[in-house]
Length: 326
Length: 314
Ligand SMILES: Cc1ncc(C[n+]2csc(CCOP(=O)(O)OP(=O)(O)O)c2C)c(N)n1
Ligand SMILES: [Mg+2]
Image 1 (cartoon, protein in one colour):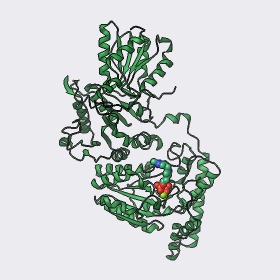
Image 2 (cartoon, rainbow over the protein chains, first blue to last red):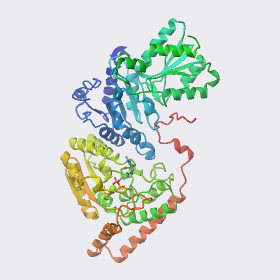
Image 3 (cartoon, rainbow over the protein chains, first blue to last red):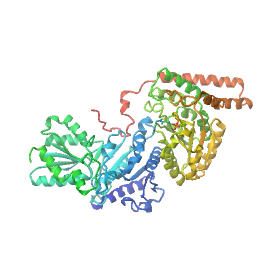
Image 4 (tube, chains in turn cyan, green):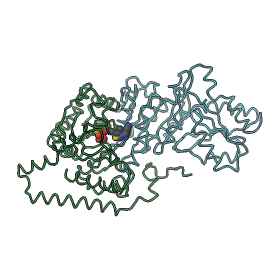
């Protein structure tokens, strides 16, 4: 095992796949000469040259569309968005073109492409720079969406995404690029569509994904001290969702709390609550609860951020509420 | 061109008879644009266009029965009945859609060319879009990158002077649309889209430039659609006189005159062509009507390449 940063894990995934397959290339704003806005692609221009590590102008719609066309014509692009907030300009090409190409063409033209970038809140960046898009894109058939939480996940999932023949979106975080974690020396892949039970437990199932899992783990540790045992499940993949792992866990714990760094309406928690009541109804001892980001645009003030985001206390309170203890 | 015209006339009739649904945008009047492109291009070249796409596969040599079956939503259609009128694809002739979002194919067309350049192929991409689509911001982003990266793409404005009911003069101060290339130093020119020879020559010149590695060209090809924007368009925005004026320059009549003046074909040969076209049209309708609908299982096919994708079914 080796210890690497999250950004290094992503880079290793891209470099390994680019060494293997000539048709894989990276494009995006500042990815080449500047070595990446968050230094994910550091050194890649030196290794692969300007043909395969390509700086684009600030034109998300245009370069996403060019990448989609390239994917239709035999290449396997990796498109880096500085963050997913800016990819809204490209969402037409992601949702209307990439997601639908295979089906609209009756299977003749696919779109093997990876879109990746920072997602979610990252401190005092205010409303336009602090949004989460997992449920937004997970809504769309034709796409796959993954949320690597650790460097290990980042490398394994990104490698799978690059090899996948369908469009895959990777939701990273500016706040996680510096996180350190262990990865194996040897090559490995993590399958898309499988959840990861991060902590085994018996009293309550907590389902979450992405950066907010840090809060969930902290809460679970505190609860452990109070004698409450939480099973923490990281979805890892938001489309497709590994429902079986969740249902199985809820059948064991009979309680579930979903924690999500996103707005409540039409969220992943709404979806999970539906699914759990549909497939584990008789096993539930209390309603599925959730801890969400506030139903507001993300505000600037530290005070308001604290109010808006899921916290250790909010998660602990929800878990206790699901157990009818205080 | 005659086949395109006769097929489209038939499509119009069938649509009125409600033989199939959806939108239906006819290409009648514009035939010289795609015919000149098809005759000026090479076999390995790529094509991408908008939703006004019934004639494009025909120009590239695909039997129109597959287009017709697609209009009927049949499993034998070009996109297995999943794309319909606006989304015609045919991999054998490198027709990469048929795209329903106005202007979406502009960056995609550049991307197709990007891939060919990347792989060292000599193919050129012809990326067609309307005068209305030229108002999308994606055009400017794409023109800039395509010029900077010298992509082997020919941008073709199928300029029929209208975007639905809005004439070009109502959306811009710059009536000469070829000037849109100027800010990117993209070689551009206006082309008479009623003359198939003029289109052919312009395409050849642009393709040669692309193949030599000199990058994209913008062709503002001036044409006209005789029918409404789609089948449901009452056409209150233009005068009968204007339509008649263009019909007097009909691209198919022009070709016929050329053939007769130069004795390229005898009267009998021309009659044979007419009869053959008629047969193909009838065969296409028969094929479409007799073809089976897609099976229900097809709904979940071709959404992902992954065969065991776990769709949510309840
Ligand atoms: C992004 C988008 N906006 C609006 C529409 C609706 N729409 C379909 S065709 C059209 C007019 C386009 O005109 P033009 O590009 O000149 O092509 P033409 O129909 O003349 O061939 C509009 C507004 C659409 N399909 N996509
Ligand atoms: Mg038009």
